Length: 173
Image (cartoon, rainbow, N blue to C red; front, side, top):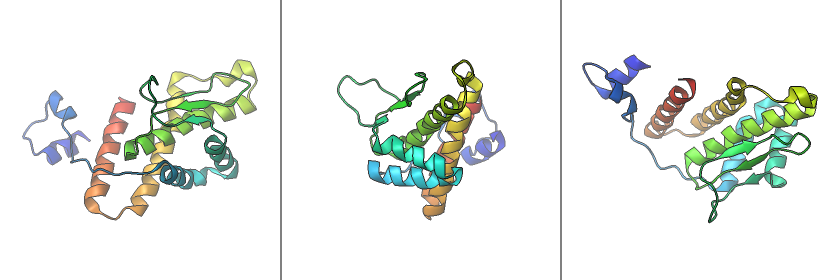
């Protein structure tokens, strides 16, 4: 990754501050909520029928507070801490690719909590902070794989891959 970054930035030596320089220019991809739902559901389909069915319930049964609203907290999170009810997602969807990716990410947390609560007794249903990010980042990987199969424009694909690499760097390190 560091060698690739050095080569793409065309610098003789890589410095710490170079880790924050953008690798590629960003593209402005817009997705309606309905398009994001379709893309996410299609991307997550390989996880099986039950996963798909419950993910669809997240959309149809209002498990997600999707839209920005006055006084609403910024960011996004999934709250699956209440053992005897389904998890809820709070986010601020603004139609960008990053919002769609955040939706997939938060659905990973939601589904993790849902299945953990469904299959484990209360004392064993919670999980460590390390495990928390496994399902969410896997959902992001499934989404970008799906989107790269749909998008044919090289500049757009490079931008998505560059942003994804940056996201992995942030999550792992």
